[in-house]
Length: 85
Image 1 (spheres, rainbow, N blue to C red):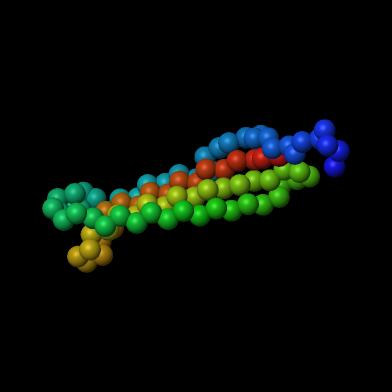
Image 2 (image 1 turned 90 degrees about the horizontal axis):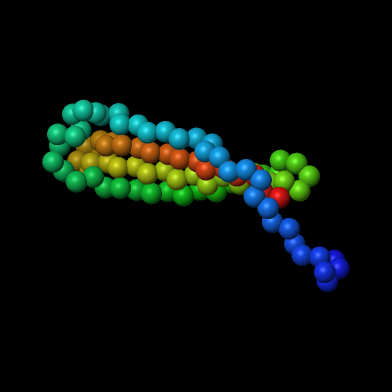
């Protein structure tokens, strides 16, 4: 590589790949005075989509459950994707 050449990093596109919200026990779950336990999970994926282009996806999943009975208060999942050069 020539000393004058610099590595190239370019954001081509950013987009919401997936977005969901589930409240399976509504509306009764909102009447329960117990505080939920919240769990947050992060995941990443990367794949080549063309010559010099890569798709990267970050997924965040947030789950809130009541400890008694393991009832789900809500589940939110969002996946943000991008194409990079």
